[in-house]
Image 1: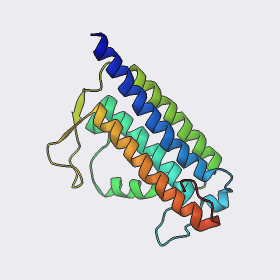
Image 2 (image 1 turned 90 degrees about the horizontal axis):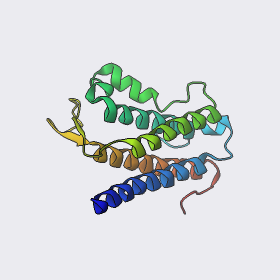
Image 3 (image 1 turned 60 degrees about the vertical axis):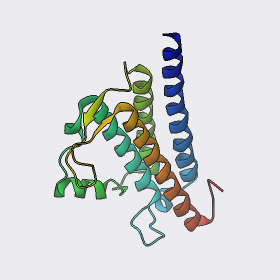
Image 4 (image 1 turned 180 degrees about the horizontal axis):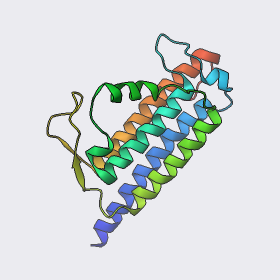
Length: 172
């Protein structure tokens, strides 16, 4: 029994450490940016630094809701969902400070959840969507891995955008 408790505690600590690391990279990337620069689209993509922070916060929040409530938290893969997804990358008049503060709130909630959940083995079916395997389910553990992967991927996007704007590099 002791080994299981130690393994579970260590696994949760690993999740939290990894999330903190990738969140930190993203937040370091936007540090010192003005709202104007955070809203620039310096590449051929529609990505901007502020929009990435907004998107990562919304993505993490949505997947935490999935952990707690199941596929209804994600909703259907319809035209409205696609438009909402695209809008999640826009600052929409928010300041970078507001977006960073919101991300901090989401991160604290996620971290509290990782520590407090009775099990990381609980699972829910994924919602029906062309980008999910039909009939697949994700455990809490798998969902946390997805949050970490998304955060890391978007931190990399942000690093490239920041370098394009002013030459600053977060990761290299």
